[in-house]
Image (cartoon, rainbow, N blue to C red; front, side):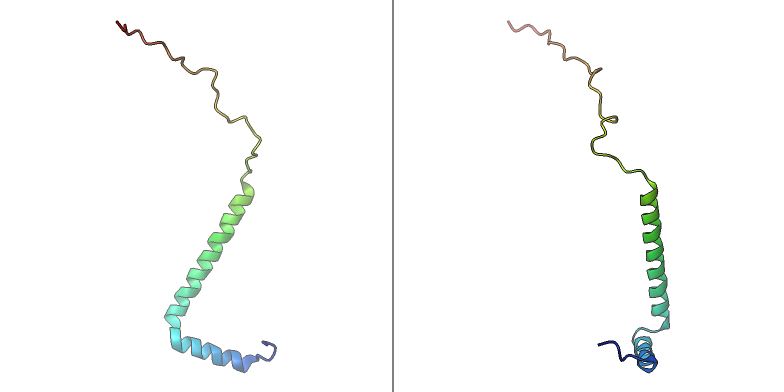
Length: 78
């Protein structure tokens, strides 16, 4: 399907895209796309550097050894 696309056809498509969008809009679109790719790559690198939490790790669970005991109320029910 795309095997017969040559440089002339690509040039025609480029001219049509420039006529529709203009150079300024294409420049901003390219810079936005580049910054999005850069942000995506940095997020991937940060995710690979951070250690992953294990589900079975119970060292960070809450400790209920030192919780206050509910005192019985001292109200008289006469």
